[in-house]
Length: 463
Image (tube, rainbow, N blue to C red; front, side, top):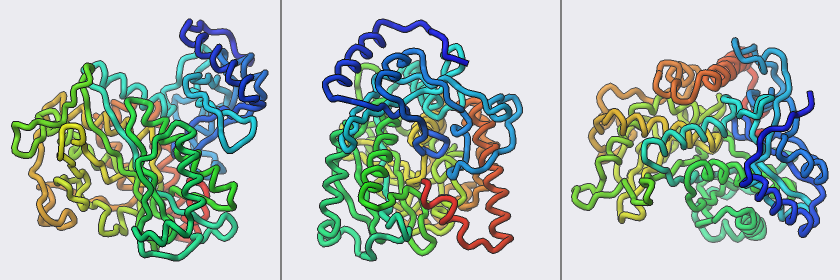
């Protein structure tokens, strides 16, 4: 079925005029139409620029099934009742968000744009992860708030041929480690900056060839887009060097976990910062306390989005010294799930440390908003702060359950949380849980068969 015309606003037409001019000026030949699947993996299609300009406002017909697949994309998932895409494998209309159009600096004559999957009438589908995040950002704004956030993604740099780390230096944070890979790191930095992603610093972690590029925070949905573009940039520039950049939260059993900490703060619609209150001894405002209480209350349901695969869940099961294991909080305490930084009004934020590198940036944004907003709306009480070892059972909040690190348990925790399921939407939750339950079956079968290569084969090259 050919895409039908839909009503287009003057704002979109104005952006399209600028895009056309940039295509001519930069001699763009092809445009990558890209979208994010359940696991934050880029999927899409490539079209010549004349076709792109012709159909930019109408959209492009593509199958929608990759939206709800597992990372390898090979499995046929059981159909989701009431979700026709999972039964008939029909096309969706993917409409470019022209505001996201970017020239790709490392590929001659290439540009990329994020496309939103829509139905035949041009309505965005509710099970797209970007749409799930958009709805939560709009809910937040309807309640008088806006979020400023950024993800800190770590990634392992592997040989694309052997899938082994490119070197075995486990020292971490030593200048000599940067120097080994400096040309590569500088190329990543420049690539991110040229894609409009502000890099705040470059970190080397304590495992073999693991790096991190913390980026500047953005408002609302833009933070999800930033995470998407960061993964694209790192993956593609690494591939050009014969490397594979893996964002798997637990790339190897013998290595520590890789994080994707979600840092965020709230402002009102007049840009006033809402987390800091100098009248309080801990400098935490009432809004911040309730928001944080919501995060803690919904942390069990959040774990499936933080470490979204059977492989990623191993980060919580076999934790290192800086990976949280209980839903708790502390001021500048890296062993807690939620680390509060409250030095100054402008730097006060919450670092959600449950999230691993394998997380989908849009779902990270969405579930943090859904949980925090519930805490504010219902004025949930904040448990006592942990002072000391956040890994100690003695410091766990009463009734708090340790993260098991098992995908099955994480799925059940999500299913039991009516607030999070209700906020993220029926179609999305049904699709997500369907995929995760199938993944649980596959993991169980692999363990029973003694398939020692299951995690590396099914996740490491894809996340």
